[in-house]
Length: 273
Image (tube, rainbow, N blue to C red):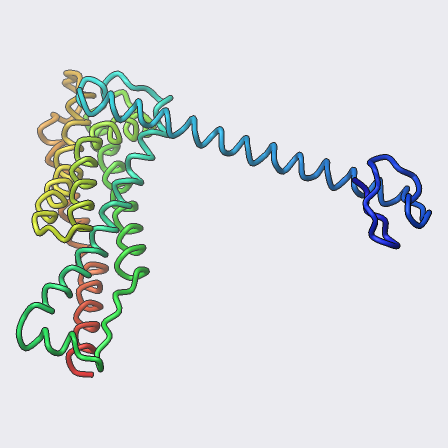
């Protein structure tokens, strides 16, 4: 339909003059055609993105289902074509841990509300404790995401010390694959934190320890071939573990301590103001 610019009457597509007032519709028809073409292009692009997202999601579902059954053997046979799935696994791990921190802190404040003296203060109208999603949700997510890739880089460095034939991409693929079972534990921990079930910390802690101390060793073992010229795998594994502990210590001084201070600040404002 072509709208008349003079009277607003809707005319049939392709009309040169308005059926009601006789005004020329030539320019309006061209504009209408252009708008229709632009809308069609936008719809096609949106459908393309939707289809691509659907394919990636389906691919990751099959990947996750396969790896969760046989993590070690599946991780060894996957190649560079599964890099996207491995990165998605790492990102989801960081997302779940970040959200677990956020909801865990909210649950902690609720638990404090059950204590007699503190509970009266927390429930009082004068107090309004707000847990920042940026500070306790997004920033922990970024921290865990960066930390995962740092550990993957350490594994790559260790593989070079042992003269293993592996590039950084293959390290990421295997790291992401062996991470899948621990992603499952972290996801369970997240769901339990939503339900305010205390044991969520156990699942999250095991997932965290496994990801940063067990998975790197599994990656090195899966790549290891006896090579007298390279560093023995026992020492390359020890190298990764020691470096991981050093990075954790630095992170604790730079970020985790600041996170605890933020929590203390929130509680202090609630208790004294």
